[in-house]
Amino acid sequence: MSSAISRQFAAAVALGAAILGLASISHREIAAADHLDAPTRTDPAFDQIPDRPADIADVYAWHTATDVIVALTFAGPNPADQAGTYDRDVLYEINISNDGIPETTEVPIRIRFGHDGNRPGVQVTGLPGGASVEGPVEETLAVNGMLVRAGLFDDPFYFDLQGFRETRSMGTLRFNNQRDFFAGQNDTGVVIQIPRALIQAQPRLIHVWSAASRFGGNL
Image (cartoon, rainbow, N blue to C red; front, side, top):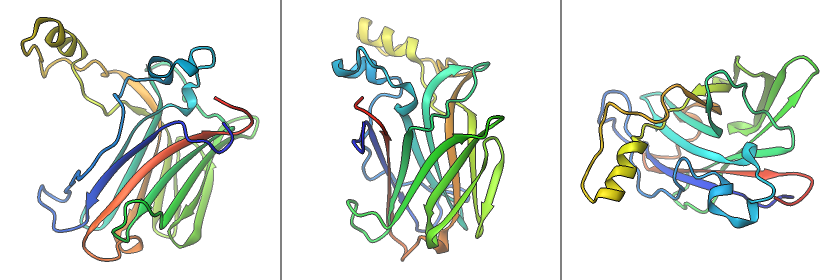
């Protein structure tokens, strides 16, 4: 789709005193779909034209004493032996608001993939201070104290799908914390580490949300 948003996910992170070790996360509000809800499962318009590369799985945000880390995952889950998904015609966005107004974007991070004929690469623009970086996937790239890595990641979403289905059909809780449906599966993703001083206006919530858009046609 030309500049139309296919999916958005949001989270809020409290940049106050750490509560659990070095990191603390405060989810004031989260807008998202089920982790396994690909577009073909949720929207009839996608039946004939599924777009797995543009399907966001999750956006995660947390902080340590010195840094904010944001992770965007998409195009999954896939078997561990499947290659990453790097579609040059999809624009991924990570939006960060640090002025206390969730609807504004003070840090508009944009992510694109490309190929040089040998290896996929990633370009990230709109980092704090107007910084940008590009380079191969599966490598950690650095710019102005920030780190960026794009590639395959073990699916971080933990869920007992069997227990969920049994609970729904039987009417009693059937979850087992030893069962993880997503274990051994991968997502393609981008992880960005940013010093807190570059985005923290004052000790308050920052808001993080993501979107994916396709160039050159409608989804």
